[in-house]
Length: 233
Image (cartoon, one colour):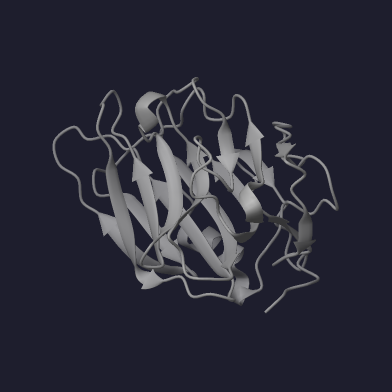
């Protein structure tokens, strides 16, 4: 299986200005809100979501995902109060899927169980230090109950063991936009750079996760070996 198999979105964020093109087969172009700029990123350019500027799509994740993987690179400039990286919420700010840096500078993910009105949050052991690029992968495997995991810079940070019929799928939600760099209510926007945001409708293998991290140089869609001509410290 190749890394491009079962990919459902690949935003390289290499634009110089304007909307962000989805390089995958899906063609899910992100709307640029408040004239969000781009700047030199981890791999070529990256989105600069400072000052409340963000990218959005009206329907991405509306149908939900069962097994899934989310991957992205981030770089921050100051300690967080709570900075939202990816957000797809419903009414009353319930959390089908949110990732953020919390006030302790830890990576955090919120996910609702399927068909539930409550949410769980999981927090990394690793601190997301300022002025450095971090690669984050979050995945859930619907064939196991102990299979929601977060990897930071290739290393497994935590793995959740669930019980009963818990299901950490990203469930259907058509009420709010999918956003990169801001929460649905515009509070706690992410400050500085986000790069190479990708989603798959499956769990990546260890070899695939290793390839994406690529000894900290990263790998950009379509993930051909050696296509990372530039990397930034």
